[in-house]
Length: 266
Image (cartoon, rainbow, N blue to C red; front, side, top):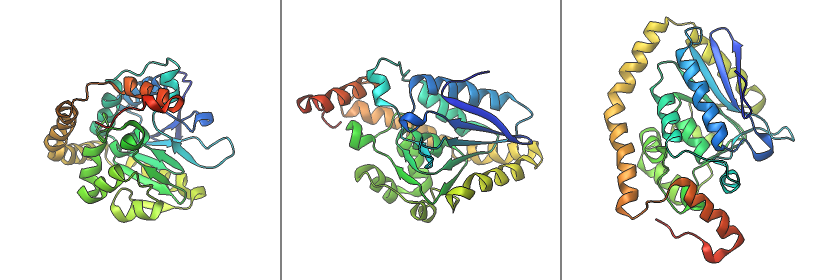
């Protein structure tokens, strides 16, 4: 199957990789990329020859590392449709998959892209990682619709979650490991190799045993996660936010042209 905005490869035996691949816009996620990612994730899940997989981003045009700048607000304003249901579907599919996933994060990694990384089982970061959650800063809403507050909370605890969202902090590689966001950090030039070695090690394990372990761990926390994800929708409703992500994004883009149209915080 061919893709326009992602690359799907087999870099090692029993290991697949998905690369977010739109360097001119820092691999920003538009509706077409998300639909391709949805198909690719489900193909990996069904493929018995794949036992572990990586999620990464293509370098910038000048060669510097880049994971993804998050959802492409410009694309929404240009009319590229972003289905409000597909983001939660993709992140939950990654989260629920009984095959180990590793987000390989270096360079810019923000907002919607971080939601994808948070859904993976592991995160390895390069020394150039610049990690942020700018839902509140850019959209006026502190609750990402793909589940970011819930996943931040389960991974790094309430204090770091609040700091990332409420101050628009940019987390570096050292902080990513110290807070528990990432398993390890590596020099940028060696990052992918370390991630591939880790994936290959897990891919060499008994696949039934891996699935059993993941199923047990995931189901142990599934009720709490699902409650938190449902609560995120309810919180937006409590505070009167009925807009879709696309509607709010269009308002943000309009406000950049005319500050008088800037959306109010939820």
